[in-house]
Image 1 (cartoon, rainbow, N blue to C red):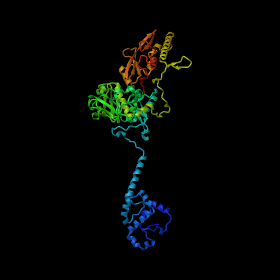
Image 2: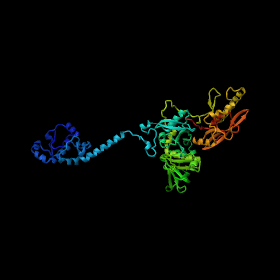
Image 3: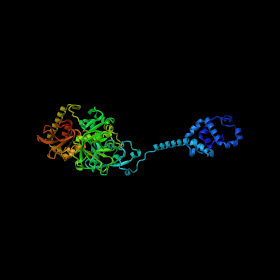
Image 4: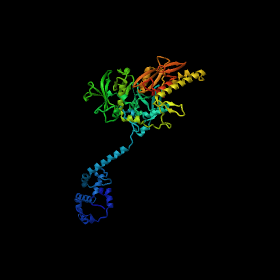
Length: 586
C-alpha cells in the first residue's frame, strides 16, 4: 500500500510497517476522511497534486497521526542520521526538506545524544580498571589509602619482593602479593622464624637518614607503604606490646589534664575511648609542646591542641579562639613518627620527640613538623591520640577482631598461645589429680618449697658426683643464656632503648649482665611507663650458690627459677613479670 505524496522514509519506518501488518484491511472509502479526496478525484486532479504537493503532505501526515498516534511518539527514540533522515531513506523532494528538518530534527537529535551518552556510560562502567604501568614516573604525591580487597585483581595478584630486617641486623627477602597487609606479613615471618605469636609482632617503618620510625597499623598495605619510602629506609620486624594497650588501660595513656571535650562536658575516663572512636564527638588533646620552626634550627614552646581537623598552635598564650589558632599539620595525608635521636640530629630540647611527616616527603627535612614533649607519658598521649583520630574504629576492629590470615602456606596453623600473657599458674601435683593454686600465699609457699627441693637435689648430686659434663653449679650459672629474655652484656642505655622500642607496658622486662658487678645480673622492668632496674646478687648457703632479688630472703638456684617465680608473684617488684623483650634472627 502506498500513499501519494508521503515520503518513502516514513513508509519504511519499522514501527509503521509493523502497525500496517497488524491492522485489518481497510477499503479506500474507510481511509477517506477530512482532507482526503476520493481515488477518482486524485486521478482527475493529478496536475493539482503536483502543484499543491506541500499541502497534500501535510494532510497525509495529519491523517496518519490521527490513525496511529503512537507512531510519532515512538519515532522520537529511533536513531536518525543527519538532517532527521531515517536509515535506508531516499531524499524527499526539495519542497519538503525544510519541513522535515523543522518538525523532526530537534527532537531526534536530543534522543540520539541521550542514547549515545547512555551507551558510553555503559561501556565505561563495564571496562576493567587499567593499572598504571609506570608508577615510578608519577608525581611525588602519596597514593590513596587502600585496604584489603580494594586493589584490582590484576594488581592484587602481582608479586613483589620486600626486604625485612631484624633487631640483630639480619635480613630476609620475602615475596608477597600487592594486597598483603602488615599483619599478614608478620604472621608469615612468625611462622618461618618459629616464634610464639601473641598478636604483638609488628612491622616498623624505619628512616635512618631522617631519624624517624613508626609501627605500621595491621590493616596497612606493605607494598603501598614501601612505595612512599626512600632508598635508605627499611622495614624492621619487632615486638610492640603497647600497640593496643590503650584499649586495655586508657587512663594510663591519657592524663586527665590533657584531655578536653568540645561542645560537651560529661566526658570522663569511662567514656574516653568511645568519644575518640565516635566520629560525631570532638575530643581534644591540649598542652605545651616544643615546636621546631620550619626551615630553622630554633625551637619554641607553644600551646598546642589536637583536633580531628589537625594539630594547631596558639599564637597568643593558651588561647583557643579561632583567630589565635594556627594549623601545624593535618592527619589525613600524614603519619606520626617517633624521633630516634632528636637531640643529636635536630637539636631537640628533650628526648621525647615525635614528628608529623607528610606522606609525600622522602628525603627532605624542611617539611617535617617536629615536636617535643616534656616526658614519655606526654609523648605517648599525643601519638596515641593522633592514631585514634586518624583511624578511629578501624584500630578497634584490628584489636578486637584481627584480620583473617591469608592461606599462603598449607600448614599455616593457628598461632601458639604466648606464655608471657599471664598464662602461667601455680599447680599442685601432690595428689592423684593436679589442681590450680588460687591462693597467692599458698602459691608463694609452693614456689619456695620447689626451690628447696631443687636445692636438695643439687646437694645430693654434689655428694654423689655428677655424671654430667657440666657441674650443677656451673650449669646454674649458664643455663639462663639460652632464654629469650636474657640479653647478655648490654649497657643500661641499650636495655632502656629496647624496652621503649617494644612498648612501655607494665611488666615488660629483660635480664642482662651487670656492668658494675661481674658476678651479678640486672632485671630491667617497666612499670607505669617508667623503667626501673633491680640487681640480682649471688649468695651462698651451705656451700651452694643462689640468686636473690631481696638480699637473700628469697633464693633461687638459677635465673630461670627466679623469672618463673616473679611471673606468678609480685614479691618486692612493683608488678609481676608479664612480657619479655625478645630479638629474633630472620
